[in-house]
Image 1 (cartoon, one colour):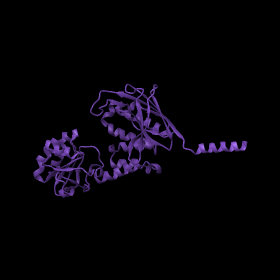
Image 2 (cartoon, helix red, strand yellow):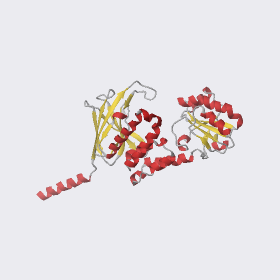
Image 3 (cartoon, one colour):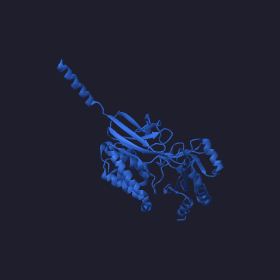
Image 4 (tube, helix red, strand yellow):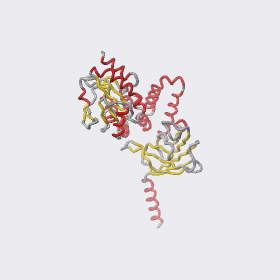
Length: 359
């Protein structure tokens, strides 16, 4: 009988040893924006959609804490959020015991943060795991950009911090996420160098890494001096218009939307470019990213844009061709369809066009 009991005990231990370990994530939240009873969500990064998705939830207790538990299947990107308030920066769940300390503050609401609530990156501390330590170190280094003498070369300093940390912490999942988020700061040569610092198979095959590779390849195709990839979009009358149909003219491509304040702010400069150059083989091709056709058509009348070539981006050309999300996005093409300039703003919208056509 003793032998049978011992056998079952051994089997139990064996089964426990083979089962996935559990993780325990304890989140502490302080500040004038967090209250006991608040619902706290755990957001997990979905590698298929490349988005954080809402997962478990728990109520903030009297000690300003919540605890999330579950099976630990390997390192993953997570963040936490308070219902109707704010969501934290991402951090890493890369060990079975992780402690996250956040400060949730409330300020006067503004255009960029209408709720007024925000988590302070400065006071977010995560303990447990190699990647959490790397993130904490990175955030400390990033705060050096607040030193006055760093202000003039802020972007270059941030790029150098990322590159230095990629060398110091090779094959870091945290740094892969940071690099992906900061990719717009890098030239394509510098980005290639950064990607070359990853060699672990699980990271080279990671969707974030592949996304960076795709981004670089797309950006190389739409770099200054390259012929813009051809695409066609519907005009006001529903007819498809190909961008290649404007060969022989200089073309100002303006991606905009009726709801975009900065886009509307650039309209006088776009109109000036048209007024100065339209009689000299120059065309403005205005491409709206409005989801509602009625909003687009109303804006064309309101902003007196009907003399432009007006197209609507129903095929997500802004993202698929130019790998771009933000607007306004204004480019100048030469008569051969080559990109002369990108990211035109202010007076450069018409000045660069005038200079190019007078060469």
